[in-house]
Length: 619
Image 1 (cartoon, rainbow, N blue to C red):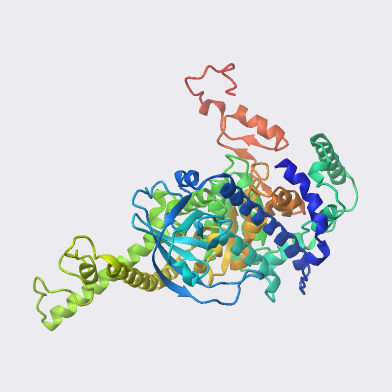
Image 2: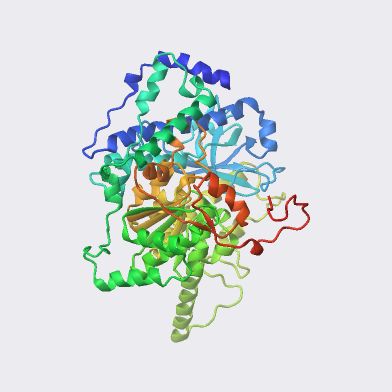
């Protein structure tokens, strides 16, 4: 791999970089450089992700991939339905080839629990080799022991109904599309809200200057310097920043994005325009919060009174607790609704949703059931949908019964089928009774007639599901509109279900562990009046596949970029989790001795069974 990386500069001079520069124009300052910077990083990351799958298909046989549950071979088509014709491309350079649902017959000896194919997972369909004869990408719509239904992002060729097919787990296209959609929105929208203007106002780096190294047949910067040289440069840079910070003189003028961030969008300041009663209510709520320490109280007060704030919380300092307080104050004290609590991590979203639920806030957890914790089912959207449908059904049955009683109708005789539901007395639909009758030869139908019947059943079932999904989507939106806080991951927030929402406030947790392209999806596509970023840049950085994208700035989170540009974070200075002696190391090495311990050593007894060298220091 290192040899491949070293060979890349030799290949790049064959490409004229000037011909690759697109024409990006915008009347709003900062938008064009922002788009140009991140659209390049997004595609570098996308190509690196696709390259991983290319290496997998090249290095591993289909038998090996099948054993790991990431591929299925020898599949035949049971039915096709829901064909969608081509439409105008939603993303530049990505033509839309239409779409179609394809039902594949599952092999009899496959254990579906072992498969990595789950509903909603991205796949690629091919004739046998995804690198040579791929048909198209898609998403798993349904999976059971009989069939796997794939929603293809293209229409099947006319001659593709016969023969065998192969399906492999593939790179998630939805993530790319939503991130690209957010960048496109920034460029194409006529006017942006102050939050988006603030984001694009901060510098994003000089991408083209770095890329110019390739055109001169030089190696990339990470190949030209040793690790010792890189560390030496970093130390010099830190010393220079320290000198600038301690040099006496005039205070630097605040940048535009810092001024935008410190604005008071709700008018809660002394001269902000809000009523005295409202300001006093906010101040009293902060002061009376006995479950907050001084640094947490300062973070909450700053979050509710400024357009954008950053909260830095080392491990154990109560980031989630502070996040719940901010969201609760937005809703209960200021009456802002709806607000969005989001993160790149499902775990972080679950933690906030759990805290909000305990605090008595009307919360809805939006997301795939298998990605959320079981004890949050009560506030999960799918659970609330099922409950709502049950209530509607019970109400309809009660009305129907009342009408029968008023009309003096006789109850249905035994053996008479329900004409409305088409159900037999045993509860089985009439259509299912006819379809499932065994033929005289045994088995469900036979030959081509049995296949046609099964295909027709699948098409009818698909049509019914589409109709039901449309109704369910309407009910889901009603449930979400009644929520005070919606908890969802950043990528799901860019989906169609929240398309009509414009949030009063957005809080993003663990933002230092997410790329900026991921973070801006809910902010740009959904909009907000206030933004709170919670995280800790001293912990793990965002996971980036592409080494080139990482060095060009993709591993720099929005949290770090805004903090580096002058927006000072509110630091939570007291940890309540670790033994005090354990916390000393991180406090000294990462937090400049600013982190204190709020728990005595006596409340963290030594775990038994370990021969500690020093019983006073459990390290």
